[in-house]
Image (cartoon, rainbow, N blue to C red; front, side, top):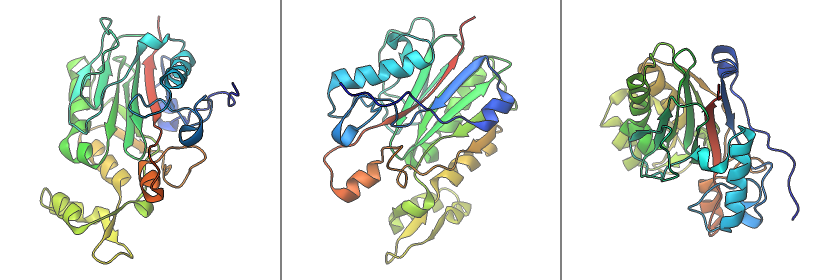
Length: 264
């Protein structure tokens, strides 16, 4: 089997500055995987129709990058909810329906999958509590970011020490939405209108999900960074649900963003 080159996850400069070596993280690209065709590269999506053995090999490679076995890679069955779960030493590989994970246990790798939605990694280096959240528009509006932070605080983190980084996700220039979508946001808060700008499509708007996500994070009291990498525009490195939809392709892969407290 022809393998791609080694994994090359994107790193957060904010994490590098504020978190230190006790916590490892990475926003993984398609590079370094064994999947082929539509899923070419590092597809970790168990919900895709890719060959399960290839998906598991890709997931094993991600876990190994952190120095962990596959069974220590914790992910959830993502359903665009506001729900965050705590993962500890009793983790058994189950994938409950939720969209965020939090742990204070060294050696467990928390991973969230994405293909346009926002992957957000969190860390309080002093408390040694980390989190990972999957936030598309529904999760971001519904409170998954705040739930993740609250759950971290319940394990001893302090929000003023938490740093959060939004990884590769769809950008405003490639996220066109209808009028009813805009109304859904504005009905919650009039000021959310600022995240929409007119599109070339009649009655449509372009939505700035990354900026909206950063606002929700900063209003929750944490320090936040946006990597400002568009999944739709960068096909060589990232899977994109919307790109697949526009091409009428039958399926798509998912990349992973992950974080781990190093073992002591």
